[in-house]
Length: 625
Image (cartoon, rainbow, N blue to C red):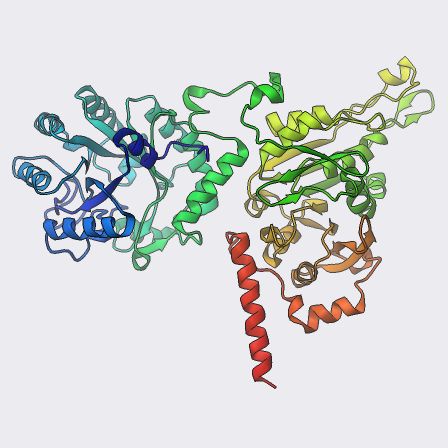
């Protein structure tokens, strides 16, 4: 897989022939920013000085080494090692220097990485590091955290940004590799602050970067502050957005050492994430890949003037989406990840028209005024483009005397994770003569800028006077890129008149068919709004009902069963669910909905959870007989 950022492990493999397993070492060095009794220090730092949990309870450095190396060799087949002197801050004084030399003599390390503070790098310390670097590859991990002096003062860091900048340049000038640590989420900082930190670090001669999310841990000064003021913390999705932006600002050759902080569960106060560490990493890689974001694409302000680009120029990494012609001559794609086509073989255009536009009564709603539409899983864009056809097709009504009447506006907000499919659609979809706007142009604009304001074509046979008097079309489409479970939370309450839900099937994409996601959709719908979907699965209809919707059917298209309509008002349900389906929903395990209470479960986890609940329900039913 072509990874969207340079991982430290891959960098070391390329440099040393194989991965270096990091062995954490606690010399119990102390910290110059603390009092002699251990009090004080940075407000976020725990009593262990951020020592690795692996070293807890080990009586000596030798014991730490032997156990860590044995574990790495047995568990991971490790062959080469990097000593990682992590806890507190190395000061490299004369009393400390023999510890490094003895350690490296006793164990066969390929490299050593030493954590310290900018204000600990005295001329004597630099001389020692230079000498050590003659015998083994030396890295210094420098606790920078942020470039903002106001924040450094607030967290009692004990040094300013100028000290960090000087230390970075000094280490680089003497041939020592420097890895900087940065924390996202420090008190009082915003996205703009994180971006400035990233841009400032990227302009300096750094060799690696380690990114942390702020943890509030028991026993810290920050914990006391949090108890009084409930400091805001970054949950996994919000942190991922800031993290990806940070990575994009890093030079492509600078390896990313880590993405998150580790804290023992019993010591962590906040944030309480629901994603495992490995799952979060996979999520970041998936999101960057689907959005076509890469490390370095914002480095040195590299922001392309996308409006002037064609799709072909904007990306040379589009995954191969091979067009498949459906029965109505419109194209769809096969998605290799989900192992499904985006549309029914009966017709992509047909599906959009008959499963979404017609049952939504969009034409009638537009006749009454402006309409806000939420298109969940935009894909190739047929549902939104067909809706815009409906709206702009009626935009040319002309009053007596040749004056065009003002049309209502259709505002579409689309949620889509995979930007690549929109780019591929822009390359392959062609507008028909009957379309009232240029589909290819709209898709291209969405792919490049995330928004489009389609303009209706002038009707054939119009006089020049009529064309001159045509009212400017005010409708628009915009896309929020990312996991819909997260991006829906960025929308306003009671914002939408219509919702189109067009995810892949429940067995492939159950993440968007849960009762929990339905509740999120319901929260952004107006009191008279309706939701349309092609899906008629019993667990989906049961989940919609549990979320508080009135649920009915729509007419079948391309298959025997119809789609589903979920309404805020019972009066909007014209075809109620048949009695045998209601019986299954209320009286059998088929009616158990999919669940994802925190919006982070994978498809497999959601399906497995439902299967476990089915088994539990049947066992309970059996024991009650």
